[in-house]
Image 1 (cartoon, rainbow, N blue to C red):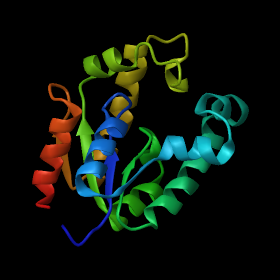
Image 2: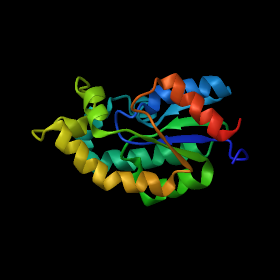
Image 3: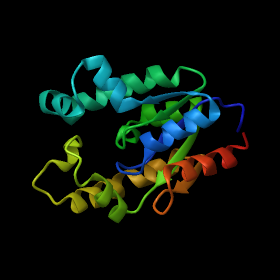
Image 4: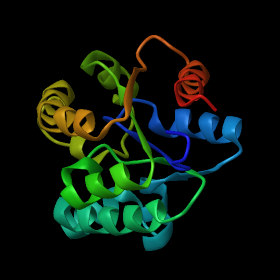
Length: 172
């Protein structure tokens, strides 16, 4: 596993991918990237604006392109967007170009961690956030599992503790 120099974090919104990714990159002396932040940097607009203007389909095209670029780099930790795994091409790139870590989180924790966050367009609907997250989990969790080299639960641990567990699993 150690010959793969990139580490890609996948999982649902609220799993802690960005926070854990920053700790992990710091610990391993790697560059950290967040695909959503990279989309915002490249477009000059926030994710909600991209969703409003281009819809989810337009956002997913941008996400696929950004992840294609980022996974072509070496020595990075990448926190992906929760829905990035919907693209077969993206799943293939993640699997082929690095170690994929699925950060598994129960719905209750996702609700608690995202309830005040207005930057998540899929939760800004009439549908109850818990119902949205349950629906997304049914669709996406099998895709996270499909490409994961290993899975770590993030519900009862600090971000630094999860990052330490990942380093142990990697054997670095």
